[in-house]
Image (cartoon, rainbow, N blue to C red; front, top):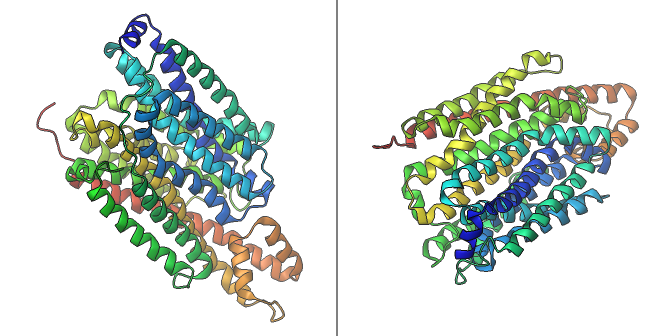
Length: 517
């Protein structure tokens, strides 16, 4: 540690900061850039709607269940080592997706990327904390936060431009360049011995807790997908949801009695911490409402029919508002106003999504951008202030684990928002498409299978169905699908508005005004 301090005094700590910021920017950029190119991936790889949702969910789920555990592992195996492993896992995932010619390789690559982002995000802040002198730490952490926010904000625009000018695969190649630079910087960090190899060789990893959480979240999300296809009381769906409940209960019991729990349930004795974790789930759902569902509407033929680059530019009011607020709010707002600011931010989410629910394909963009900005303000406030509120009641010794759980909740929100929004959207689409299919000529076999294909199937399967129908029937069915798509978008926006109202009530009821400072 003495050698670390000596080198830090000479400014070498900026190597650590630059390496951490490069890795964080790469994973943040990719997280949102992928959203912009999902429609292109769907068309190019002929993916169904449910598979497309799992391209998001596997990434978020893997990151959510591994983030805290990998942070613990870094204490034993070395933060730089785990950081580099995270970079390598993300790079391997990017290579797999860039070379993919089917859904299996894409989904496998997303799992690797989820592990990679967990490795990078769980160690990068800790690396900066350890290597940076105390009087420079605030500035260094501010740069890290800016790198994440800028990557998140610019991801849709960069991804859309690369998709239009080259290919959707180019965004994953661009990853490799940034990840490679971060890796080379880490090599310099290791040679200069700026970060200790290990802080606590006795750290234990709660593998049973990880397994229970993975099983609970995985079966719950898959159960939501299954329920859309086979029915909520089917022999396939009910066991999945039952396993999710049992695994969730097992996780709570395990964490209650484990010597080194993945999640210290004692944190939830603090009302502020409960508000922060649940608020982050709301915030994740809100992000997916824009980055996934609104983005699909922008690029769908039934919506605006934008190209990926146009969609990325159209999302700029959201991402820029989020960036500006997340970078300035923590500096401007005193602790006594955080509860009011977060309640207002959640109300902004509710208002923004409600204003977006009546957007149609004929709506001028001049009537849309400011609604996106309102949502961006809400997300920016939640993203930047909820961790601060949640951690202020915890001892400093628990800040790392507490912060990891709060970040994990954001990924859980991203995954559950995708799944829940998909369930509602498919239900609304079926309400328009199914009656039309039921009126088709009697010679059309297996109507139930046809209904599933038209709502959940890939574009090639839908095109085959349309090609086999009489022209008049195909026209009626196409119109039903177009109308159902617009109504589904509207329904998801209303759902997100309700989620925002829930978040506002949560923040108003639970966040306490500090008695001092």
